[in-house]
View 1 (cartoon, rainbow, N blue to C red):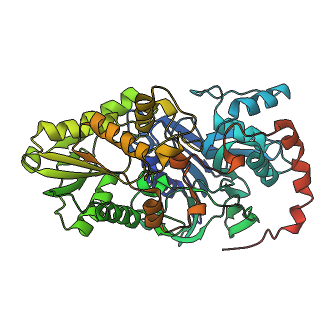
View 2 (cartoon, one colour):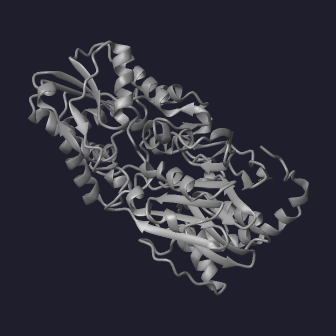
View 3 (cartoon, rainbow, N blue to C red):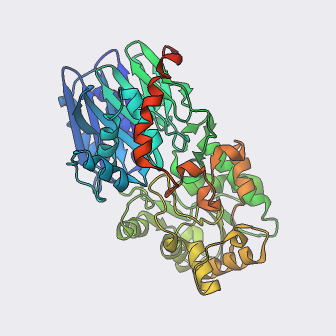
Length: 500
């Protein structure tokens, strides 16, 4: 998962861009990048795997000058990409994942195009998106072409002489929010980037919507597509920052409500203290404590200055190292106590087992009751870089052990009222080595967020998603490329001057 930020300022924007992009550091761990447009384009990309965004870009800010710019903290590929196109030069930053990237790249190479950027995969997805955009009749048509072609999701910021084109992916999987401040206009993945920089939210972009930010304000270039929104539920449960809001709903409040729901189903538990796995689990734990009346304490603390999230790095070895080093147990809080530990989720389960539960037992915990704020994860994410394969999921390992083989139909294990669901949870609890394990239900998780169920992406838990967004959907790439001509006829029918 990546975070993107853009700003158009009445003055030089480099400092605003620097701090605004830095507020997305929790979303990616591989690369950071900034591009500023003044007399020309100034662009910098740095490797963030062994350092923080601020330390790498602090010196660059003084060498970048212009009134508009975009930034990104990337989970995988180097970006922003610079491309000199027939529409003029532009820089592009993206957030999402293109499941059919190889097939799309192959089609472009048949047409004589080449790819130059290095990627852990076969093609840099942002470079691919940039070149797909240039196949349109103009930049807006090119962005719409991307929406039609890709499987997965892609939200983007395109920096051009005309301004910053911002486009939210067609199903609204990732948020994009526009803001206004005394110094100009901004667009962000995370609203937490606005508060200290003087911006206020003026618009939560619709799925498929395209807007243009420039010195005159924010103008709509294409309205939302009117399809069912499928925003990522995991944003509120884990990925998002506590101070951020998506669709107007604050993350911290949702996590507290999740904790309250967990406590309501736990009337038979007697415990001495409640806590959460830092950082996101703390909010769930606070909600549990408020509802249950059990004191909230911190048996595990995170060494924040040196370690980021253990979930986002692609390497399992890196994830394990961070998980082992960042959590420090406090024996004086743990010893002899019955502890309820709230966690945002159990993905693989290895970090919780080896680097949290083991430390609690090792410091003398009497009982450990684990309460994840979401249901068992059953499917790898197809819209972003989170869970990466079915085989690594704790729930799937349990099913393989219980059944003796993988199952194509896991509906009985998804149903929290079925005997097989109970067997799966018992297996995971035993594997983790905890006293009890109870997951949040889908219904309670949805209620905690407060959006209608049909507006949330629940694919990781239910396997259900909009057909056109799922990988390997029946889709003719060549025909889709030809279809962009139909959109041109519609251009003049759209009000392109809506201003915020």
